Length: 178
Image (tube, rainbow, N blue to C red; front, side, top):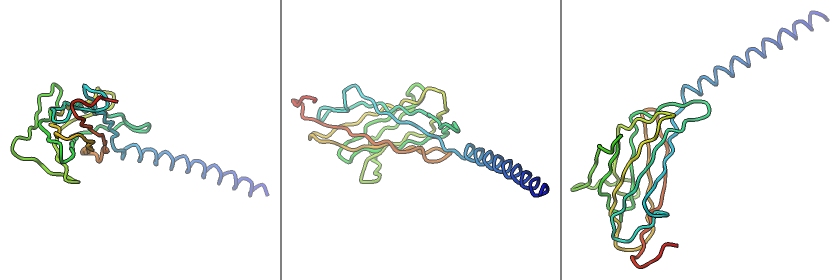
């Protein structure tokens, strides 16, 4: 009987140590295979992204690596695809530490999913704990009033960084903001 008790205790200790070791290995695997988590936020000079129809709108997209509770991987060589409704006309996209990098649509309009028009910013490096990247976007709004769906897709060398959707609203010039 004593031998059965000793074997049971040894079995319990070995099982507990094995479970702890497997849990630790699983946590390490999770930590080293984590993809970056990037938060996107759109800003403008007007409230609720409501602009006069036919005007030129200036938007700022703030991108920040917020990390995860178990890992904080860098987002290297981040590529942002800023997609606009087909009625909007993208003019320029500036990014970089001093907005020195520029993409302009003068002759060629790139078409994306859902017949959208898009601009691309590439080569952005985002690290956890650092201030995020600002992307300045200029877009020409249509002459008609309406709501236009837009979205930003982010991809880095480490993997997908998510999609952020926002709505740009055009109103008639004499219409008031609610």
